Image (cartoon, rainbow, N blue to C red; front, side):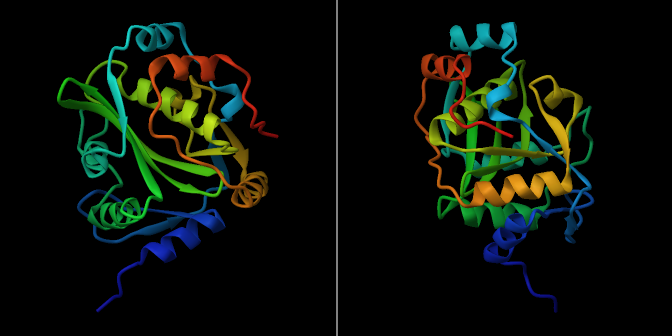
Amino acid sequence: MSLQLTPEQLLRAYALGIFPMARNRHDAKLFWIDPESRGILPLDRFHLARSLKKSLKKGAFTVRCDTAFEAVMNGCAEPTAVRPETWINEEITRLFVELHQVGITHSVETWAGDELVGGLYGLSLGSAFFGESMFSRTDDASKVALAHLVARLRKGGYSLLDVQFVTGHLARFGAVEIPRRDYLVLLAAALERRAVFHGDLGDAEVLELLSSQSSTQMS
């Protein structure tokens, strides 16, 4: 019988620059990914589109953190017309939920009344945040969650937002690819610093943080 991966082993892997994925949500096996090029979103170069700024100004959603972590993971794992399969299986969910219970993984959630309509989740180590996945059930829901995440990371003194792979969607916000060796340099520096994940942040403060130059510069 194979031994289950532990949360401690998962954290060591992230600190080395590798992360797990499954072929699909029904496959029990995990594969370690160590891409030659890594996607990052420089925190001082986040692109706040005019339409997203408008959504934040009018408070289109209520944004909360860490109140429905597993529900966010399930939202990210559910099939959609655009994405019929995802890489988040039961094993990944188990590991991240266990890490959430000790305050290492976080969710940013967008709510319309009592309905969870979007969000994202990720893992925090030192001043690095590893963004894992996001989902949206209505227009702008995941975009607002991402804006809130970046604002929280800026305020908390984070220096690295790892997005793993750059999609066309993430590129619109400023995400770029860098070579593995450059990524590992940034990661090593980020792991040496402490940062704080701020859960309580309103839309007005988010807009202020995103409009000002970040104090955490990416090289």
